[in-house]
Length: 64
Image (cartoon, rainbow, N blue to C red; front, side):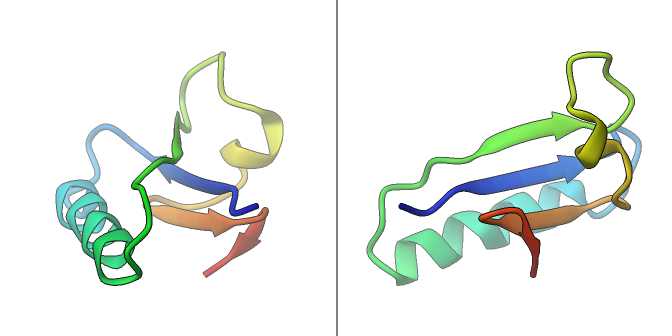
């Protein structure tokens, strides 16, 4: 199973383009586009997500 996570800061200028590229990647792979998003500054984000820069995409908790 593929576990994809998108980690970002709300004010990061690259978030919109990175999210669009993530959608394109799922489409190219003919996979249903589903991932979790974590705002690095949110109390609801897990500790490991807050340690990454913005934007970051993790696949099965590995940075890509």
